[in-house]
Length: 142
Image (cartoon, rainbow, N blue to C red):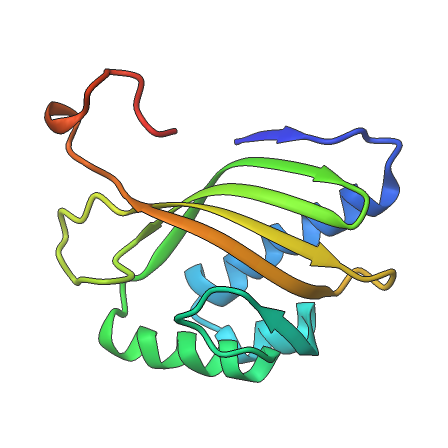
């Protein structure tokens, strides 16, 4: 994982650590409702049109998804943080299927944090990961 942060920016360091913990607890440890209540403000604003706004709404949506896709996971490749914003380049696996050969979905998540280190807002862009043979180059997505 590559982390790009000015380590003198205490807010960015704290927020990056919180985001990494959220991903781990919410998706990899399968504790969505518990983790959103820990890291996200109740009135959280969600810009992904397929997820509800509000911390509990997002937590419940991930709980429901885990019922259908119990092997869902996330791997973080890059974190870029400045002040109250954190950008993450990630790969989600098994968020839409239970296929053991799932190539995953690449995502760029953008999170806004408040002065207490809680997430207040989220934007994302998602893209299916193609097989390398189908790519126009050999650079890979990560």
